Length: 462
Image (cartoon, rainbow, N blue to C red; front, side):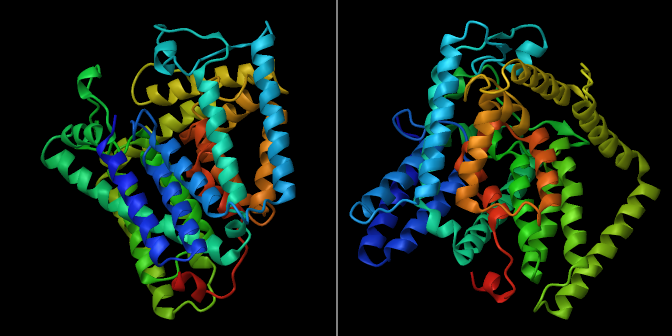
């Protein structure tokens, strides 16, 4: 009924609420809860928190109900955002009605079906039908939209927006330390002990599992499975690097953690992690070429020294350890090629990429058969944001969703076109559709809505 982590979250919430009632100001507490809800959504994606309620749902409910209760007598809602939300809901409901009434819905991989089993011929695609997953997904997007409307004052204020991104960035620092701990335990002890501990922490009975997930041995070491589930796997570092892309690396401390993040990618032992390294390098090169106002010369010199040192290290590896270098990067190249070129291979290392590509091809096929309304939110799986969104939402749903988000964040696409292209590319390869309507993606949306800040001391103060 209760998981250990669920109890910790509930107790922490009650303690923080008590502190607010005694000392804190209302706005501070609301902002604190928003940060906490986003962090939980990023790093804790499976298991049961309390009474059958998952962690994503619990954190969303705690935030929304608390904010509404604290503002019951002075609750004001932005009319434009409210209208956009209503339009989105109408489109999504029509899509679900179409799912129920239309006898010619396309075949999809239903949420109850494993994509792997369909790929290997054990399972099969089925006609899109209404299920509990549609209701669950609809609930998630409603809760996120309500939270965004309730938090509009934070997203329209550049100070709060940057504070939010800074806090999420710091949460990733803790995540890197956890990754390091797991990496050490996996390689010096056993790669299954931490995963078993996590199952206990989030309330999953290991006796009911067909196998105990362990970190795979790749390149001669056990990589990082992710202490808090697939949702917090190394791919969520796309969020971290997007924040760094927007905010830059302004201090020695931030430079240290940025370098640490590269090691975290390497420790992951997976192609997903390696695939993010080019993004990290783009960020770093952009940062050292663009001199920030108020940046100390010592920090700038250190950044250039790190760049030159990394280049020389890569050169050394290429010249004297060519076999190891080739094994790692050929693996990465093969997997990404399988995704981009559509190769369906059954042998390592292309297999997992091929499965994702296979699932995405079915999602795209479903979209082209039902382009306007899609097959309904929460209907089909898809290992990619683009294929998943368009298949489930359709053109009208995607347009309505983007319109709503733009009323909250005021997207600055022209100034961040390069970042947009990179994020779409990586999210289409690494992340699943449900990220787009979880709290977890709020930092990404915020990054595209944040205004430029000329006073560089603002980041340091926060």
